[in-house]
Length: 328
Image 1 (tube, rainbow, N blue to C red):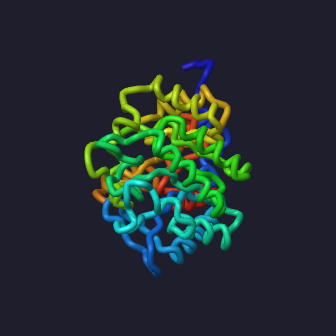
Image 2 (cartoon, rainbow, N blue to C red):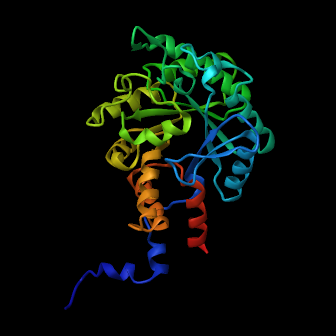
Image 3 (cartoon, rainbow, N blue to C red):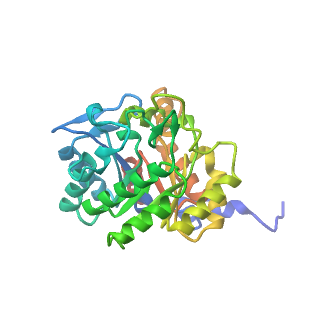
């Protein structure tokens, strides 16, 4: 055969494949979600997330330093609040000595170089397990936004580099930006969960924080998974209101959304490789149905290829180590 084009030429060795690779995955593009719990010397396994833990502040610092040493430069914090501190007002979310605020201060004191992002939503603090204040069986928008803005200021005061509103209330990005500006936090960023879908893939996460909704579901504020144009509207509004980074959540079943968002905005796009997606890989690997390490790198690279500049993933540390092995 005489062919004018032979595409296999660019695939014939590892050196050549590496040289022409279109999509790069690097530890600095990964965000490590971490669950914080009260206590000391606590490293509590999460059964639905094999290999992941709820961490007391001392164990949190060990984990953060390990992540940093592996090249992961950003963590996203979630606090597991004791039941006795939960109510329908978000009071504990505003406590300057609350678990989240202490976690932020501890990390920034011991490792100031690392980027600390914080979850801003009421579900971990809510006696109803919802992301907002409940009135007459409805999750109300505007009162919730007021609390979220105060919560964001509290996190900024503790030293957070970015607040990450995950609630999907209307207008909360603008309110948070105004509150941060009014209190002089001009350098505090906002990573908005702009296109967060009402997904079945959050189950293990809700186990980790004991934050499953006590009634109904979250479909009146999280997005319908059948919609795509709606995601663009949400993202563009968040950018207009002051978001520095926008997020699509989940990731693997929403690669088309990540790609579409990337075409529409000039800010960094992040994607959240969520707990259910993590658990599926872990379960399949434990059954011997796939190679866990290969699956991690393939899936994370696919999320990057779709357009994500940043990826929040429970595989952050493992992926960073695998990438180092590949580099060597």
